[in-house]
Length: 206
Image (cartoon, rainbow, N blue to C red; front, side, top):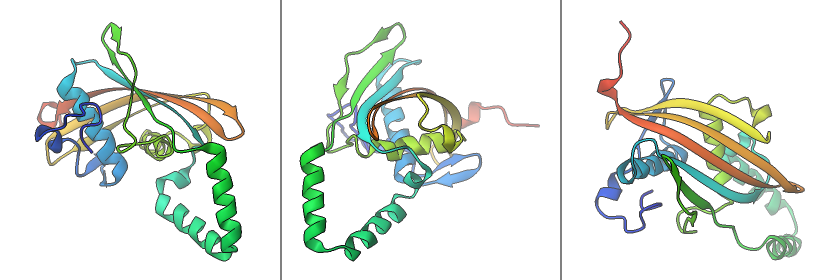
């Protein structure tokens, strides 16, 4: 999960991302934890303190807790498809693909202190618009935002996550804006502010 911003990558990029992220004492070693800490590490390494990032994309479907366990959702879909006629399933799938086209790209913009950069597109090899809702769901979950609010026009949240193996704490605050374009098609824009601090610099309770 490196080279999302800096496409040249390199050996240093390979060290990005937490293998395990602790939030309120609970460890997360999933793809979302790796992705978000990787992209924050990239920003931390390449941009001045106080830099925020913005991700924007259009994708279908509501944000809902089932996105936190995609393997269960995918298995449910597979079971449903197996129960259907194969020719009917293929026709339905082709009709949907023809209607919506390939996955969309995600626009990424860096918000430097006093300046906004021009947006760039994330390569589809790294991430596409269809996968972004799964990652957004985890931010909302970690911030303890009630799922009844996940699809509101504007949602704010914050959380702290510890990478104990590397000795970092991520302090994250975000605002997610969602705009309904048509039936279950949303344009979403996430603006994320963060600090990364050494765990040793954080005061411990007496």
